[in-house]
Length: 415
Image (cartoon, rainbow, N blue to C red; front, side, top):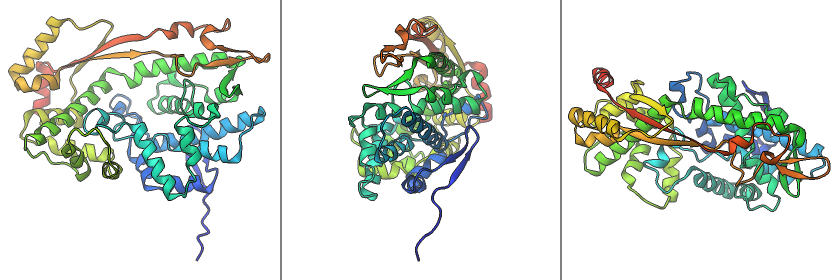
């Protein structure tokens, strides 16, 4: 019997309201196991340790991007930009799947146990696999995703200084964290989009909305993405994974979910095999949290202390400074850890992390303002800009986290 179910459904999104599915292939992609997995991956990592509402998923972000891309296509067509039905469908697929290769807790695994598997490369591998399943229907979407399609502006809508991905995550993350400084006018910016000489441009009257977007992005990085507490939590999560891997390599059993243990046992491979990809798609945030909960009771003091710190949000002292940490201060913190937890523990519990933000980097896809005469100018060189030029300069700070006597006693007491 033929399946007559309606695939052109709608989602009720707390940010935009109703989000429609534009065609049946998009519905089928959303139903794929690899895409449904994004429901179980938090968009902002451990930012919910600071902002309790930040529990939204990458699934919701992907749907939001699909919604904004539909608005962008409609806007460009109203301005007589020719976009074929095939291109429209392809750019929807590309934006929907752009984050499908993300691992648990965003980037934590990329730097620890999934070597050779950057999330963008994994996204491409997943898209290529889906393309085989769908008999080549993703051919054009993959070209756009890889920036190989001649119509450059379609790729710029996916990834550039002012792309649909950023327009959604800034507005969405602002909504769920409650950080109003990040609330951008995404509708206004999209309504100002245009195409000139195959480049995505912004009508000049949208300049102040774009400047607000650039400033909002800077505020969101310093207030949310690089908040001292969430950075410390992610650092300790990464260190717990590293310690588990190190113990396993020494022949010490650590335990964990089958998917996570596969990667802990995998070693430092440079290539990412088809089997790696298959197991990777079985893993989500729950694998990490389940394993950390088990490791709280592990006999290794370093592993159980790190795991307890993350699971119970009993985190180290954390500071963000405008200057480099003095070596004497660093030495003092390291000596304390050596005397209390042992020499092997020092590098796990004391960290200095340089942080740098460039709100506007015009080396890749500069934001071009387009006027009625057909001229384009970089927003930072426009005589109408007010705030953009200072946003060229990188802002550098230093994240310093460490355990002191009070924090360590509290942490050990909970363990």
